[in-house]
Length: 136
Image 1 (cartoon, rainbow, N blue to C red):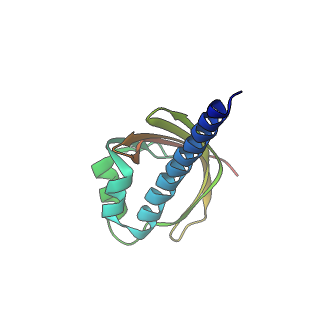
Image 2: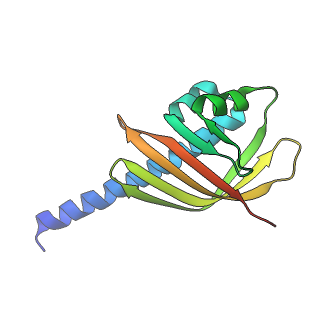
């Protein structure tokens, strides 16, 4: 291979790694915002046309999700991601993995998650979310 081809391949690999980390950052961003009840941050990390399906089957759009998070005392204590995999398809990313969810005053539980992110103007935003609660 020529030096130019090697440089191009290295640059492409680095760009892919950067985009993957940006998606992971967006996932951490919305969970941190949910814990802190930060409506502005939730608005930044969630796509306008968000479709959010909870582990219990309830579905919400962006406005409903933000309203539920902001209502009353804090609902979430923490989210801990493990086993994350991010697959990139141009301006779309699919994140899969596990999340240990800790709600205030309750035992933590584990879900298998599937999240779809879209990139618009350089910002990754969650457009779809589906969780399945796992038995212990």
